[in-house]
Image (cartoon, rainbow, N blue to C red; front, top):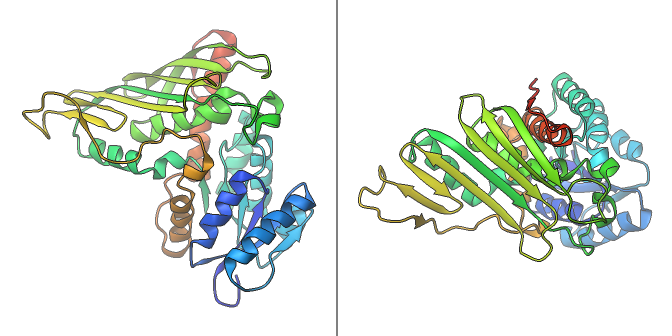
Length: 347
């Protein structure tokens, strides 16, 4: 904490997402961007230089070449973990063990062993956490959640989510995201947004059955996966992910069918709300059809964590809950590789 009583944040990483986290941190008056650590000293310097000028005064942002040095900085209260996927769990565990609150980029982990160790570390710690399943803070999702909670479409019996993001060579993470050892796989690196939103909007998933294909040679894992779902309540659904579609725009599709109506993206059909409705009605709000991190609601996510630390406000997606969404993504990935249905492991 600094002399003005602000919580000090250290960012781990210096890429596009780290810069968006920095902007969200500076936008919150309770936070101070205090330090940065990445694998490249020059990239850390660039991030620090850019955001020092935006801070309008104060001590310089400290640069640490080793992550352990950032964790040993006793003035740092929160660590923002923005490294590649395969480092998320291990470095978040280190932050918890060092007594830091954690802002963790998704995926929370890329193996079951990582998820279990991460869950254990989070439960041992008295620190707070938030995971960047950013759709939970999206305006459309907030509207849909409110409609579902008010039974606008009755009991949901079918849930469908699609994450279609054609990863081009110009994508900032292209060099590592196309390798399974670093990314984890299509459903783990991107499709986890769909598994998380299915859980958030409808409920826990009991069993999955999946198939996969690959339409590009620059990735070393299947890049399109589709999974049938059975939820704990007996309802059914579908989740798909595709990183292949470089010739059409990013799409995140949301469909929920209920006993009294249906939701399709930003459209609603509800006879209980609109008795004389003849067609779907559009909800006038933004939709999540952009893969650009500049459009992600990082500010709302990080503000949520600060409110949790200060006031005990629940976080929409903390580490333990995010691990449940990753268990679904891992189960789908395994089912697609074996061709067999698989129960979802839950802690």
